[in-house]
Image (cartoon, rainbow, N blue to C red):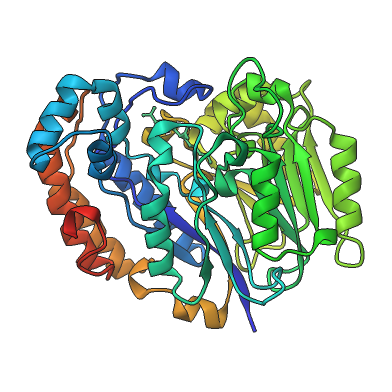
Length: 442
Ligand code: SUG
């Protein structure tokens, strides 16, 4: 039976804005307060999905979440009608309200950690929604993410997010890589963490993933211990702005492509992967040296926040990188060198996701990878599968409902809430999500 890696992209929501909410994410901090372009953002996301679909890859879609997130505001003591809560919250707790307005669920790489059925003891696909507990605006995503995943993958085991506590801080697939010989065979799952949850917090930018969260997920996904690897991020990477490992590393099939400074102990990481892959495949380590690409360039241009994909008919892997990678001298030169070499990456294609990039979300952040066999793919909710007809409908839907511009002042006006809810209500029909999918519909 065929098994492929499907990419499920987060559809960018109507309240996309630049809130400056993520400490340690340099793009988010540097672009705080910019006027956002939600319509362009959503269309850029849809174009990326179309490009992947037309390249012959399995492409899926995850719906945006409801914002503002009234369950959070009501738990914080605001009462009355939605409009009254909206206005009172902006007056009395504007910072909380900014968090409740973020369209951050677009970064689907943080939606969950995924273990395909080939790796799990019970032969089922396992997904654990990430609690995203380090950042307030992201910590409110997981209940709805769980619902979205249960709707998209009705045949899978969707776990509850880990307890929302610092020891279990979890950021999902952004800190997880699966290497394998072929998608349908046993793989090696690499969990990358930024800190020991029981140790004192590191100075500097926050480390968002703990070892304890990764271990808990590996246990509940029923992974084989001998095929599972844990690796610590380097302080240098986190301090340079690698708030997730997927900002400095991406892997596919046998290849791990990463920056020299990504990990605390690269030699150990390589030895551990080799030993976990024994009898399955020979890992390929494609390490990018600081001398050729300084980590600052790698992070600014998001070289590693690319999708590393196997395009049908191509013998080598293709890197789907953001336009910003082509605009940076060091990263562009490195890409040219990669393609000219006879290494595992044979092509680099550039995509425009600039609106998301300004919040620190590159092509890889926008998608959740789910390796599925043919039978599983056929059981995915049809409304979560990309097709050219759904693309046309979604494009039309975005053009009809999304604002061209959204400023920090615009998001304080209740009309943005009313417009968004109208749009999302319509979306539940387009994507066959059910009429009670969003909290405002229940
Ligand atoms: O969690 N940005 C996201 C970007 C997530 C990128 N994901 C991966 N690397 N996989 C974050 O920091 C910024 C929102 C704002 O500031 O308005 C934000 O949440």
